[in-house]
Image (cartoon, rainbow, N blue to C red; front, side, top):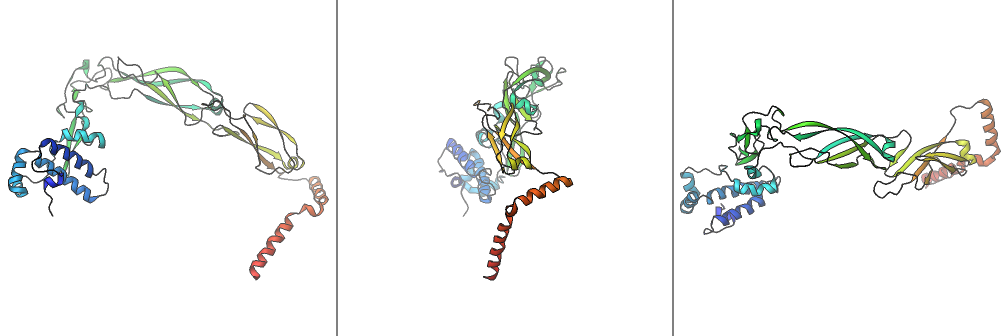
Length: 374
């Protein structure tokens, strides 16, 4: 069944243009491809919705359609959706689907100025110690400032004229298949105005690049990826405005010994195997000095010992994390004859207890034999 244009927009024959316009907005949003990705039926309905609106919103086409139907339109030279200028409607849809629908018409009266943000981003490298304990860092930042000679217009003496490419609308339309897509005019950047001659001071950019040297306070406890906000150190967009905000992203180097995990610090502590067997007191270096660790006899390899409040101070709460000492058992790579003899004597002195693993292996072998014979 062929849908009538009135059925497509879900309106009646007697409805006026305002009702038709509202119905079109509703149906265009309902079947728009962005809301119905990879849906062929929705795409087809979207085409029909646009076609229906172009006919019913035009008094002449609507009258022909009422009397003679689609055949009358075709005989009169109409052959479907033509991509007419629906900018008043597309302006509303543009707030939902972006610039493709030409929301830039609101820019017609906007004075052309340099297009750059008042905010600025900057990457700052810190070493491990600077991040953990905080510091002061001298930085040199390049920022943009509006050109005073052209008042940020990019035009000589600030003189502008209507853009000849978009005729002051700020947009140009490109035919793509069944519809016309509105795009920001690349010649006037959507302002609707352009210069006849570029400003020599800024070479038509509307801004100049300046350098700012100052010192930043790095708080104790910052970490890799943290962002510091520095007011009044960003770009300067206009003469009546203050400089924007500088966002400093921190990149922190790793330490050769300390491993950081949030506010906690891990360090690997090498201990000779004889000390493990005997149990000794050792000195462990922390962020702020040494602490004494009493190793119990038989401490396991990779066993961890935690010292509270010896880690990194949290940049928000001020509480310190933990310091974790991870034991790494060290064995000699070579033994002299004398050392080998002493170890043998020690080994024999334990008697049967020197090979406790034998009992474990025997139990495993017995279990496997039981599985096989069962």
